[in-house]
Image 1: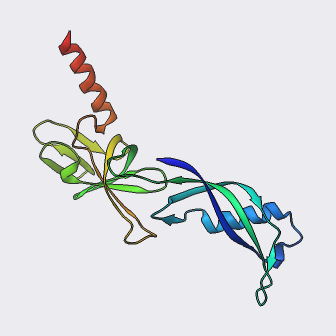
Image 2: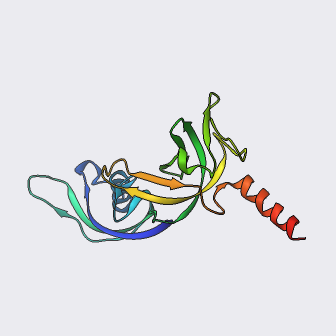
Length: 185
């Protein structure tokens, strides 16, 4: 889920920016520090929206830069277990598929791609043997988050599944819903 979060931090503005607009300098330093920042508490910071407030700067002896206590807003992506997401298949390998969730990719193990025996084809697609479903690069899919690992904070791992009802290729989900409606008539 995407959130707008308010943060507070001491932001370092180097002496080379002392003559510039203070708020613009603070915003530039916040963007440099926080854009792409990843943590277990925030998830992934997508962008810094604005500086809400800042106090008068303090110069730390031996550094020469000014430090401003600042309050600012960021847009961040923080996924939760069992959260349903929509993304685009970026790549397919023999062990599964990678789906782009915006600023990060999730991985769907081949056993979690569909409720069928799945084989990998030479044209980088996954094909269901009995039910005939397929998954290829560029497909828009709905998946559910089943694992999140921040073991390497700079490279979090997101595990996904598409083996439950209303998950999988959006086109296939629509077709199934239409078929159920027709059958009910």
